[in-house]
Structures are given as structure tokens and as C-alpha cells.
Image 1 (cartoon, rainbow, N blue to C red):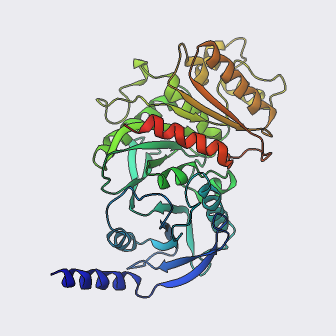
Image 2: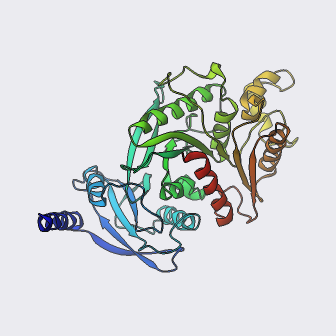
Image 3: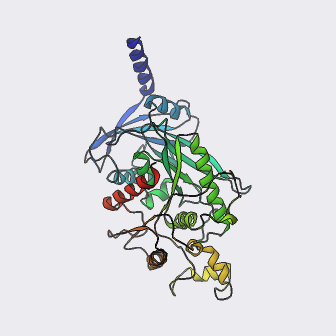
Length: 398
């Protein structure tokens, strides 16, 4: 019977890799080329292909217990181009060092330096750690003009339930758009997934084209619906119900807003799953705008705000409603704040205003300034990312 099982597994593996091609990809983390095994979809009928880069043999234990063979077979059957990247258990193949490689993967897709023989769908390029599955297009707010959804990457059949990170996309058009993730060096969700957390990227509640305005409080009821939907959906996927929002740029105010409006009933009972709690267990907040009551005098956005909201002196309450910080009346859940040293003066000012207000309320805050001058980008500093990873573990693990 054991011999039969081995033969069956060998047959499945052979079937999975039949027709596969092997290329090399240059890794920053390992300093050498890694094997990239490419398997085309089982029944390809698309002009452009969604892509799964399956990250195998990392330096961290695999949290999902389902077999690679079963997962990859289903990806190919669902019309994904699958590229399995084998790290061969390299010692640095884990966060926070792995973030550099994950960023390079997205950069290489954007520059058309990887899988060049295929027409890849830049809006659907997923970096999936071994033992994980992907669930796409989970509806969280049924707006008739623009339904809002999220994509979830999660450990399949984990030994114990896991926590989740939730990000509202910087790309208003494509929630997992590779171009915006690459430009912003946003590797936080991708890396967190390799650490055993579930991750979810949600549609930004504001439709394109984005003009720097997040209509509040309308956005609040939508993002809370996203939290509730992830919590409900997660119960069927092996998640523990703990959620931390992560926000950068136009998503930063969304992450903070989930914290500052916590416990305010006027924002509940909108969208799906009214009977589910919308609380979050913290937030990672990066560069963004958090209040419109304390702007630099030369802020280039002021004329645009005045055109939409009216003059601030005459419409103070309208301006107050737009800022996540201005809903804050007491100490929050512990927060993690970080920003790049060479961000625009407006963004640096907003971060200082936020930190000052949180200090006044005696909130538990961890703050890190990224000293590498990289402008409007998510940090790739291993020291900051390592502390952030500890924050995730402290807030999301049981």
C-alpha cells in the first residue's frame, strides 16, 4: 500500500510538471540565481494570463498543511500561469530580508524582465507562499455603480487559526495592480504572507480617477464592511478573526480611520454582515493625510479642498469630518507608524501632527523614521520591517 501511495504521488508530480520549463531568476537575498519552474494553465483561453509566483522552500516553516501538488493543480485549472520559485531553504529567505526580493519580483514584472514569453496580466500578479491559496473577488460592499471586493491569500488548512492583514489598495483601478505595488515598493502584504499570516488587498473605496479626495464619512462605512467581510470569510478559511489594517499613501487614512472610529455606532450597520464586529487590533500607518485642520500654509491641495468643501473658516465641520485624526477622542489600540525621511513636507508635517495628538492621548505608539532617502515609498529597511513583524505577531497571534 505504501509503494502504491509513493507511485501515485510520483505520478501526480510528473503530471503537474509535464510540459513545464525551467528558467533562472536572480535573487538579491541569496546572491545567486534561483530556479523558476513555469507551468502554463491547464486550459488556457485568455489573451493575458493572471500569474501566481509560488514561493517554495523558504527559510520559515510552512503554516499551510495542504500539499503543493493539490494547490498548484487548482491554480493551473483556474487559468493561472504558475511560476514556482525555489529558494532551497536559503538562510535569509524570510522577512525582513525577503522584502527586497519580493520588490524585485514586482519590479521585474513591471519592466518586462520576467516571463517575457507570456502576456501577463499586470493587474493580477500574486506572490503566493507555499501551502497558501488565493481567494479572489470577495464582495464587501455592493455599490450598484462600483461593487467593492477584496482578494485573500491565506495558509490552506493551517494547524491553528492565523491572523490577517488588510490593506486598501493605492491603485483605485486594480486592487492588486503590480505597477502601483512596484512603484511604491510595497512588499508588506507579500512578506507577511510568507510569515504565515493571511493577507487581504481590498478595493480602495474611492473610484478612479483619484483626485486626492476621500469622501468621509462615506468611506468609513465601506471600509468597516471590508473588515467585517474579511472576518466572516476568514472563519471558513482558518483565520482567527484578528485583523490589522495597513495603509500607505491614499490607503493610510483608511487604516487610521478604522482605529479612530472604533466603537462609534453611527458608522455601523452599512454594507454586509451587520452582526459582525468591525473592530481591528491595531494599524500600520505610513505616509498620508490624517487631518485637514492643520495643513502647511503652502499646501498645494488647499485650493482643491476649498473648491469641494468650501472655505475652511466657513465650513469647519465639513473639513473636520474628512480627517481620520479628528475622530480621535481617546487612546487607541497600539499603532505602528513609519515614514521616509525624504517624503514631501506636507506628509512629514502630517505625521508629526498625528504623533503629537497620539502622545497627548497617551496612546501606545511605535514610530520609525526610514533614514534611506527614497521619497514616497514603503520602507524596505530590514530593521524597521523586523520590528513591524514583531508588532504583527504580538497583535495577531492568540
